[in-house]
Structure formats: structure tokens, C-alpha cells
Image (cartoon, rainbow, N blue to C red; front, side, top):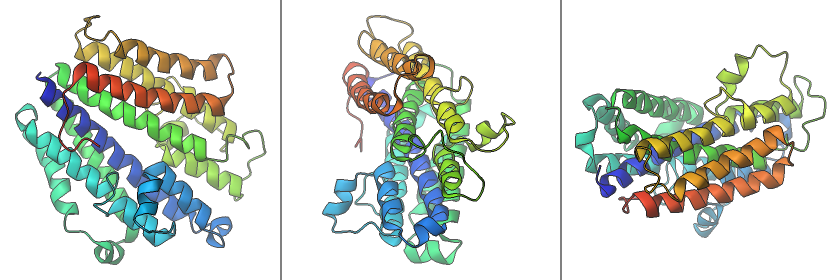
Length: 317
């Protein structure tokens, strides 16, 4: 695959994953905002939502304040925000268009159709046709449909390129959710249904996209410590940091055909991410500082991937 086309497909995968993660975070925050502890003092919740989903500095420079309406509109609809759901779908579609011949008709139509649909939306339309929670749920479904269509792609390096982009975004999102959630420092407290801690534990799991796979463990209740351990080191969940980092290693090997010269720097960097996660799982390393190191390693790996494997892609931001 040409380096330019590979870069486009890499960023397409990143944008689709980012759109899904932002939509999921906004949908959970919109529900959580009705809880008593946030209903009376909503500012911190929307600041946290903004920090997870987008660039807070970009938001502040636009002269906005972190309330429900501003954050929801900025993170979902605003084209000035390069990480809004609308901007991400636009970026994914633009990058896919340059490599249209590599995709099946179903994959292209799923992505292009989502982009066309969302172009007609504004705040009034969202609020009059189901509200922000429905809009977020629609976005998540569309991203899942696009990803499902990718399963029909030829089993060459293309799926590995897309997967690598998705996993970089997913790890960054899960780490941000964990870093800003209070459940890490409160993980050993009793978590009773109906309490603020229970709601935040449930919200953390939902923002990270782990509700379904966590529930399959047939656990009794919702324990913050179990949720943290699950999101970090569950060996089977597609949304645990351990599985995502291991998937990145596999994707790098797959897209280079195992050629060690082709991944001389990126593969060791990806394996360092796996080692950092295992340190929390096996060596009982302190979670908060390790998470900070992981996010730095993710962005460093992203730079290495761009340098070692791809030319600059359109709309990559």
C-alpha cells in the first residue's frame, strides 16, 4: 500500500473511533447530569466531560463556558472543534474518499451515509428529535456499522493499518476516562446502589465502552476496584488497556509483514505500552502515575507511526 493511502486509512480509523468515544462520553454525561450531586452543581461534570472528549484550550479560546449546552454543542456539532463528532465523521469520510478503491461498497456507503446525515443537524434539530442522548446513540451505532463493514475488507495490510489507528484512539480515551474519574482514589470504598459512587462507577464503565463485556462476568454488584481492574487488565475485553495495547503490537507486525526493519522503532514502542499496562496488572504498580506515562507513550507512538510508516494524510489533526 502506498504510504499516502496508508496514512489516510490510519486517520480514517482514528476519526471513526474518536467520533464513537466522544459520542459515548457525551451520552453518559448527559444522563449523569440529572443525578442529585451534579444537578445542583453541574460545572465540574461538564469540565470533566470536555477534558475527556476534546481540547479544553480550544474550547476556552472560542470564548465558551463549560455548561451543558455549550459542551454538548461544542463536542458534537461545532465544526471549529476538530474532535467534535461532526468534525470526526467529516475527517473520516475525507480520508476514506482518497482511498475509496480500497473499500467495499458497504464500507463506503456506511461512512458516507453517516457523514451526509449529520450535515443536516443543528442544535434545534437534535433537541426536537430525541435530544442529545439519542443523537449520541445514533452516532455510536453508525460508527459500529462502519467498523462492521470493515470486516469484509481483504485480509492484507489495510485492516491492520485501520486497527492501529483505532487502538491508539481507544487507549487514549480509556486512559482519559480513568484519569478523570474519582473511582480510582475511591476504589476501596463500599459502593452501594443509588449512591454517587455507584453512579460514577457505572458512568466510568459506560464512557469506556465496557458495560456489555463487564456484565458477562456475572459479577455481583458494581465494585469500583473491579471496574478499574477490568478496564486496565481484563485479558478478553476488547476495551481493556491490555487487549488494546496487545492489538497494537499485532497490527504493527501485520501491516509490516513481520519485517523488523520496517518497524524498528514502532514495535518496541508498542511493546513498551504493553509492559506499562502489565506493570499495573501484575506488579501492582501505582495506577495514577502509570496512566500518565501511558498517555505520553501513546502520543509518542503516534508520532513514530507517522514518521516510520505513513505520509501525511488529509485532515489529520
